[in-house]
Length: 114
Ligand SMILES: C[S@@+](CC[C@H](N)C(=O)[O-])C[C@H]1O[C@@H](n2cnc3c(N)ncnc32)[C@H](O)[C@@H]1O
Image 1 (cartoon, rainbow, N blue to C red):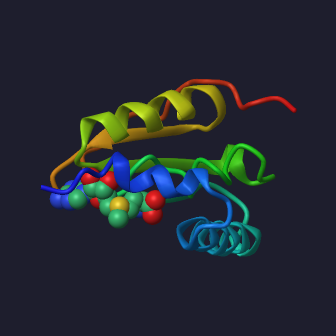
Image 2 (spheres, rainbow, N blue to C red):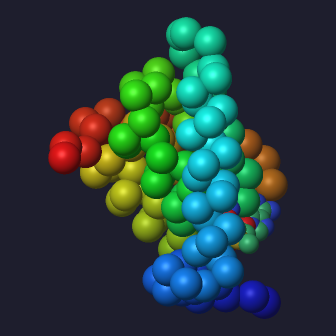
């Protein structure tokens, strides 16, 4: 079985193809939030891993406070890492899941400061 925690290690190298991909994904998410109409935004991330895409955008994006996000992740270690990051900087509730959109309440954590 694949180690989905180890899979994320390539993100630690900013020159890796995976890091380049992450920058593209974040840019797309940011653009989508820029274009979203005023009001609440719901975000569902399936196979979310450590949530580096979503959690790397929401805390600093001006629409971040409008977003309720659910991250569905199979590996409890990745889910725990994502939950810890979300608690410090994003209004997200990563949820362990097996392909189903298990819901978790939005974390009441404040947004990260500068
Ligand atoms: C290739 S990684 C991608 C992680 C993240 N989306 C990213 O791009 O950084 C795929 C992730 O999907 C998770 N996964 C695999 N099967 C799943 C399932 N049935 N339900 C939820 N998550 C699953 C794995 O644990 C792994 O963390």
